[in-house]
Image (cartoon, rainbow, N blue to C red):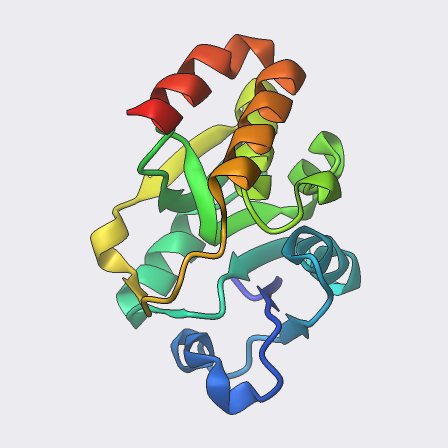
Length: 179
């Protein structure tokens, strides 16, 4: 697939601080978005991409070429490919590939959520709209560990917000958050 662009939302100043770039094949356009919060950067990246397909990649991951090829062979207008979500049984944006029309249909990433759980909201909206969500095992994507800056209060208000916004998914969200 040639009609694809990569979006990497980040607050890192230097390209050399973004290990993800090493996993992107040569010739694939990369749009690094340094807008804050991350949800806004994700949306601006899709808006600025002039391709039908977009792959959002976190700035702190790496993966092999076989995974890239598998994602490209699987994603289509009705199929979204993303890393499995360990809490909610959906997919997350550490790596997610989708057709631009899907992003438009569901209204993109909810910028009110800032830099946490915007991917859960996006996945819920895609699932609710009937898209086929295909997950990639977490073990296939290497993640550079870093400090978690999300507080219990941040997590709690986002949980309440998402439960009110998506009541059908509330049991899944609560069970995933509380374990």
